[in-house]
Amino acid sequence: MAQTGQIGTGWGSGAAFAESGGDLRPLFRVAIFGLAGKLQRVTEIVLRHARHNQYRFVVAPGRGPGEYDIAVVDMTARGGPEVASTLRRLPRARPVVRLGRRSDEVRGQDDLLQSSFTVNLLKTLNRVVESSLLAEHEAAALPVLAPALFGRRAPSDRHCALIVDDSPSVRRQLTVALQRMGLECEGAQSAHAALDLLAQRAYAIAFVDVVMPEMDGYRLTREIKRNRATRPMPVVILTSRSSPFDLARGALAGCDSYLVKPVALHSLRATVSRQLARTG
Image 1 (cartoon, rainbow, N blue to C red):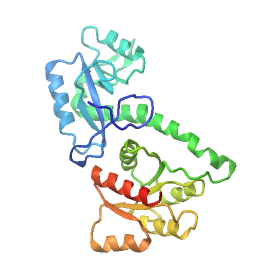
Image 2: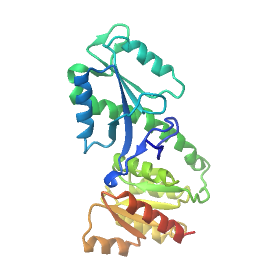
Image 3: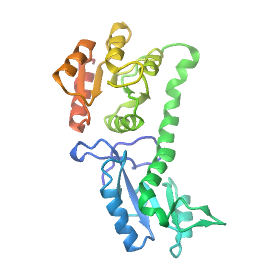
Image 4: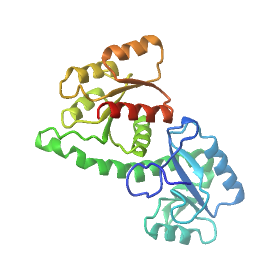
């Protein structure tokens, strides 16, 4: 699998972006070590049919360095504990999920028990992504907030997008897609949080969800376009509503473009290219 867009910095070729069918979910490759044939088939079935999960997982084509993003090791198989220990010591090691039958006095509780394998496999993989990869992404974004400590607005960054959405999964998915296009990203979970960020620095483009608590995306767009400092920034409204009435409301609010969820990758790329070319 060719290297594609990533979240964060520590997983090398991980977090591949799923392009098939306009699927905007981050894609992670799961390598299997020591699982019996039956459990391996169950793994493939669970991952293949998890269409509504926030991340997309597939069984990795290989188990060598750089060929997978997450390792699942059967700790009850012969040599399982040694394999897990070795994988953790590798340079640029990937996260390891330990599969076992019980709590072990030496190892402690394994990450995933065989007794609840089918039910908890996706939950465990999601937890690994949240704790390992997204934590790196958030840590990498911290220096961007430094100007706020000095009470001044940072200069414009032509390579940073602002994503305003109260859904963490939507913010993560858009971050992966936009990073693949060469844009850094910052997220805000509300319109008020977005206005605070806009007071600190300028962004190349903003993606604004419509349905948010306290202040919706239309009102936020109007606030952005009323401000002389933020008016030139392209605003792309994101919503699941696609009626002519909703499109008209977006236009009246002053948005520069309108994308309907779920957003196809080619539509997102075309919109970003068009808006950034317009603003130079």
